[in-house]
Amino acid sequence: MLDIADFVHGATPEKITENQERLKENQRRRGAPVEAIDEIIALFKVAREGEKINKVQKEIGKKKKNKEDAADLIAEKTELEKQKKDADAAATEKELLRDRKLASIGNYVHEDVPTSQDEADNAILSTWAPEWFKEEKPAYCLSHDDVLHRLDGFDQKRGTKIFGHRGYCLVNYGLLLNLALVNYGLEFLFGKKYTLNQPPYFMLKQFMAKTAQLEQFDEELYKVTENEDKASERYLIATSEQPLSALHSGEWLQDSDLPIKYAGYSTCYRKEAGSHGKEVMGIFRVHQFEKIEQFVMTKPEDSWDAFKDMMKNSEEFYQSLGLPYRVVDIVSGALNNAASRKNDLEAWFPSQGKYKELVSCSNCTDYQTRALEIRYRQKKDLADEKESGTDENKKIYVHALNATLCATERTLCCILENYQTETGIIVPEVLRKYIPGQPKEILYTKELVEKSSADKSKTKAKQNSAPKKGNVTEGMRNLKV
Image (cartoon, rainbow, N blue to C red; front, top):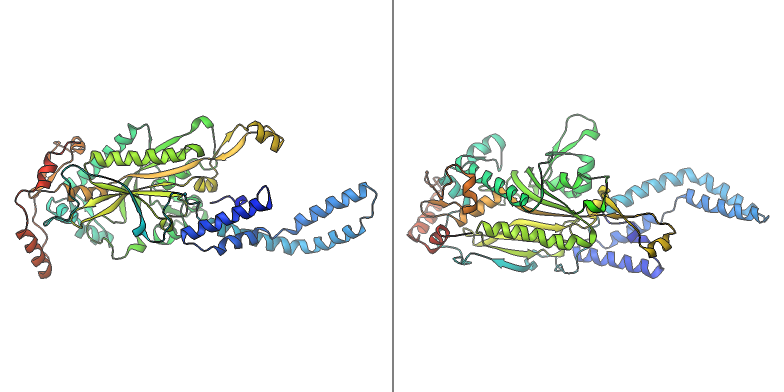
């Protein structure tokens, strides 16, 4: 959450106004209601009667000390005390409302983020591809689920039977390829001096509420209940970022502890309530998947350098897999509340002829750590000491950043489409050592699933136009990364 001081404090009245206008402009960029800022300010200004009484009591003390008549103030104090009980209850209620509204206000959007409410305006920052790549939809290309079926790599029918919509089982080489991505991803980040961490897959509600947005509880998170005790409510994690962000909650870190870099590995669980009808075939968008996440905490002055480093890691990882991609800067209106800026890495899916998201990297600055109370002490400089009248250390909230390295099922989809041949798939060189027998190629063992008559005619037309030997196939066979 943001600092409440930004709404009502400032060295001068002009500074307070400047802060409030900045908050309103931030709301406009996010496409969020501007009036929410005024509502929070109004709620903050509802003073407790107890504070008024304390002020009057001080004035009474001054007058008595100077032997002045304080009868009028004493009468005022008596009246205020009569009102205090009801006023305190009202003020407490308003403070709770204020804090709920405060939690709904998004982080400050970085100045370089494109201002728009339409993701079509996402800015393309860079692209990368192997030499053989052409950005066009091939005349004949199987979708990842068809490739996976022909490899006998997954069982969607039985997975759906026992789980329901979007259920699946990874089997044989489908499972081995997925585990190869897990092992390669962990080894990759371990080599970058990240601390490997497999956190709990459940979180208590009190911690989840400080790291997840309210909408996520309805659209994304699975609730697990044991009994009627609210304190024991738990949620399945949607990403290891959630438990990793809460690991140091309530802690005072040392200056020398930073940066802290975690490589989180977990199974992730998402309801995907807002994606009905999207990506229903295969394993691109599912309720359960594995993911390796970068989570970093830094000093405020270092967080934007860390942001670049984390994206660089993700780019290096996908270059090593030989997957064509582009990096995009996400528009202000599509940022979640915590993110000040978000870059996505979108990889090429030839069966659809378009780029699709594999990586999201966000700098959340101190938005999460303020709610979780993760901070460190820094020695005040001379100017700070003079202003505060003390030489105590300054409290500073650390900055928190997160970035996908590899959502393995989704990355597997991309590999299957880009590395397919007429007879099977080429195994990316960096993954071979993690698969029994270290195969260079995995051959098809099954034919395509029987489809409807309409689908059959489409498939036949594609097969008639299929090349016997394609440049892409030869390019993948000879690819060195």
